[in-house]
Image 1 (cartoon, rainbow, N blue to C red):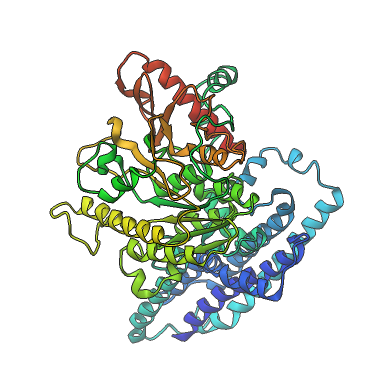
Image 2: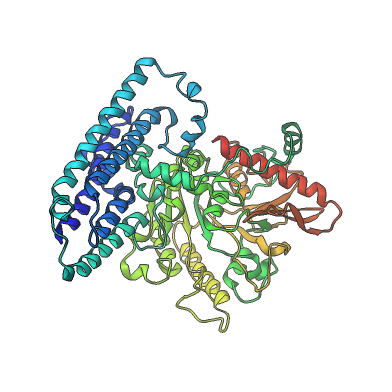
Length: 618
């Protein structure tokens, strides 16, 4: 009975050992001038385990199934495993060699983009010396053979106990069901390793990111996992959303995103304020009376708005947190079906508010009470300038249980305040993402009875009000700029609101804090995507790194509009009206008014085509 379990365990951990060995080789050969200590190496091995568990699980599934079948009938397991071991050895060796060879040129881990070059192998190898190709072939052969021998050693002794054909006996009938239960349990453990545990998020590239040093994060990534993950999530960006010829596209796009760091209105009373950016989960203008929404849901926000600079016509670019974060923090567009954050190799190339501030001497911290690995958030944040991340595991078990998604907003905003109090005199920037205003709408609060959605947002508003009052009483308030913005609007609330409703994606954008020169309302139509290029010039910094973010306070901002993508659709609002287009049916589903709708749609299609091309080329 135990031989089969030992066989699966040895096979599984042999593959994990192979992955660990490769990571050490990667650190030895591909770290360039970066110095890596023994501690760095141990961290790479430890934090990289989720990928290694997943990859070992993928390749252990077939042997596990064969072991289960062999409980009930005899099979030629030895011959099958020989072939399977050769296959596994070849896949691992090829992935390791490709990764360690290409990384110095790509500066990101092996992914499915390598497949784009396989239709022209001559061009792919044109820049590689003949001796290098010969060396790679020799390494591929020897590596495959070496790994095959390792896997064979893991199998040979154990499968002798399987009692296969050749004079051996079948297992006793009374042991079969016990053996089956054991193997099902082993399968469950393997599945958890593949999935990445039992948390809300599943394994992704950023799961293993742990450092603000990119090379260490890349070293922790298993190249087999990276390739499979990117292949599963791959889209054909070369063919999708090609609406116009290049000359026509360029002509339309030229006037949409002007670059201008000049400011027609100075909002701040100092050039280098400390900055707190609070991203309010799902906060919609429909919930804020000051923006024309429901009464008495968010009274604290409305009160704070009267003391700060309120942008009354800001709209979300997207519909999910992972997309909204990219829009707000990197000034980069969202897409109908693609999450930029999930694409590690591309998202790490994005500009960001944090990286621009870091160049100006700011330190960057990110605080979130939930699973920081969700949708590759950790990988994106470390890659774009955040040196410190405070997330789920930095809160106690009791704190993490205050909401389904993690630590509630009372806990997180309290930690935000404490973190602010720890800051020194150098300029700093802290971003905080809230989570209590997210379904299942369970909060320790019951002010708005009979409406659990509104009550959840009221709770966030209550805790926000407390935080602002505490900060006002501290010595940090006077030199601090507080930015309040939403990641997206709440889905389906109020009941019946749809993408064809103009207010569907209307969100708050409010600047407050002691660094604000005077309260005012700015009625200019804009997107959350415009935050970076609007704020940086107020600090005397350039927003030129953000090609799709506009300085809405510049004299050249002559065509205000708000663009939005949702699943297989897009919309655009400008001074002429509101248009919604369905990408599946390729039809306009809403025009308000019909006059000007065709031109609005041309501009929206141009934005989608341009941004998709830009994303493809990153």
